[in-house]
Length: 236
Image 1 (cartoon, one colour):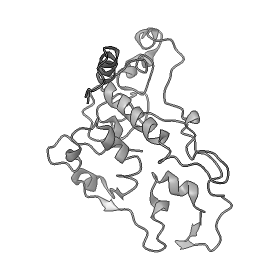
Image 2: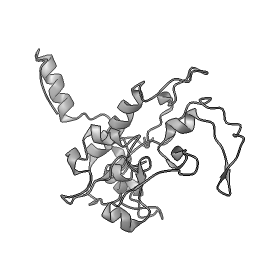
Image 3: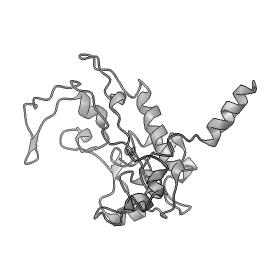
């Protein structure tokens, strides 16, 4: 699910957020933005940022068209629409009966990765491709910001309610599996290209090996301030 619709041109629609790395911006698109509030009906519309609101004039259930609207899918009964007609009886799905697992959560370390977190580069794959409007440069910071945005957002009980009937959180973060951790030992992978031909894909791929242990400059500066007894600081 895209967490951004970032472009390089000065006049693009999200420019007021200041930066694609802005956590407030990324989190605003977890339950908002493309796939929630609006959609693009074509590539031409996407290029021009002609955003069409997601609505449901027939039955006032716009959430059934929102692929990001996890909350409403989780808490409401489901009614099939056969031939466009909403059935009188709901399905056997019991609202709030199951926690949701993120079985493949991640973003490539590539420019504008949050525009299309599922995209990856692999010359041997028919699905290889760049995120929308990416310049193809390596960007480990956007990969980290994506994971921070998702983790912080869904860790907040205001966004992740508890089932009144079953006692589980809507999103079970203990079952949030980040893509991808490779069993091959870092740094031999990706550096041992005589052993593993996919090592060259690592630089701009989804791998966490060698990256998950790194911290941001802001985090390190904050730790240094606190270790020195400085509590009033801004590392934004």
